[in-house]
Length: 581
Image (cartoon, rainbow, N blue to C red; front, side, top):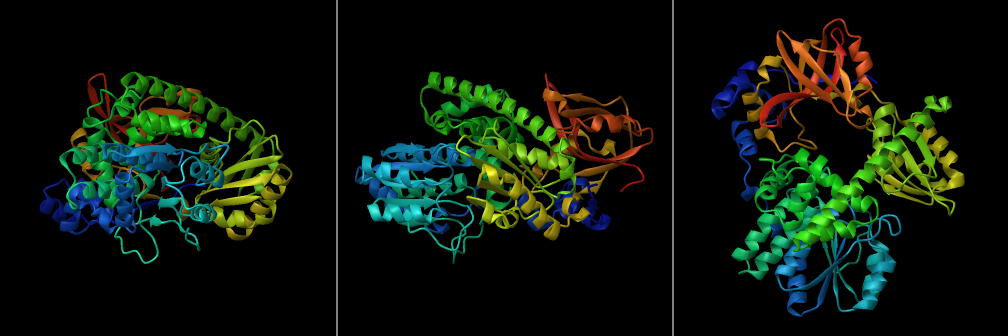
């Protein structure tokens, strides 16, 4: 489907007034207005967001009660176990609480379930095992548990004290834990409901530091810890793709600074293997494409405990070995993903009868359960269809992961297949499932039939919202550096998107990167030439090379520093022949 470009109306007089009030360029003012920041005071608060803009942790539902119980457990010399999820959000949140409790003098350890064997969330076998080992321990979940109703009931029956900290969707029944900490609990008046698991863990740690201090303020030592912890919270926030607005944007803005100035021994080792060690300033993209994939690789390949160990160790030699191992796991993960993506594309092309289906359901015995979600997203983008990939197992079952496209409600789509599934869960954009291998064809046909009835995407479902139309010559280094004040960029706060018209090729485009996945081109407009890169769009090369007439491009400007040279480049998002808008 051709993507629709939607332009924000350009009010020249209003943007000049805003620019004058804030002493900024008209271009930055136009982008602010395109993002709903028309009022000078509101725009100023957005540009100058401060760490003090974070809400006091005591306002977060359940935090005070949780902190009281945790401090009491520490004082009573009871063991405290952190039960974290295996993704980046869970790993960083677990590490935040571990550091906090270790500095508080607690006897603290952590439990991270194996993705393939135990699956997501609290599980009854683990709860029973932890209780048998030490029935007096305090168990704290991080980034999971709000849907673990049966597991919480078991803990209650055993007499195991359980605190659940989570941010995921709340079901019709709340778990019967000792305390629930969640920004969107029923009846909550907390002003920002989009914290990730690490963000919630950071707030819990902050409250513990307050109570360990004078009740309102943390001790100097714990304040230094919180400065470091905000860096871990930033990594979890970016990796979990929660909206980078309000509190999340503040956490990431100051967390990026913390990663540069206050990193732990383990994080320094991770920065080294990620080749970010010498970088002057970090961006959210450095987390998304540098740090997060390496931490995530451990969880996807069943070794998330090692990622927590890396982020909590005080041994530099051990830290470097762990970081190098995560680097190796990440290389393995990329190799596995490329193979699965190639097989998935070949499977679609070999079954032309699926072309009439609005959805894709693909299954294979060789696919690794830990990485199929990432590949499902890429298959969905490649074919413009909601996609479910299923890893078939020797026991006759399959574990699947799905990703939506163009607003398709994946959860309700899978609900229509309930009779053919063992279990399923998730939300509109992403979901997981378990199925008998013999039922895969039934799931494929049932989901396609449901989509045929209920899924009618329009150009608006995949539209690109454009901040402004510009000349290439306007997108210079000074302008892009000023636009950086809008960051950090990510979910719901994307890089500024601009359109240039009457663009032509300065040189033939070419592919680059592993598997020739990416596109590189030099583009010209009225004498200004700039490099453009389109990640994951190597297939554009052939069609773009045929363009003899000028065309239009949609892009996000970025700053690239290489070997001491700094220049502006364009991340090419979309392009169209000149007559198409």
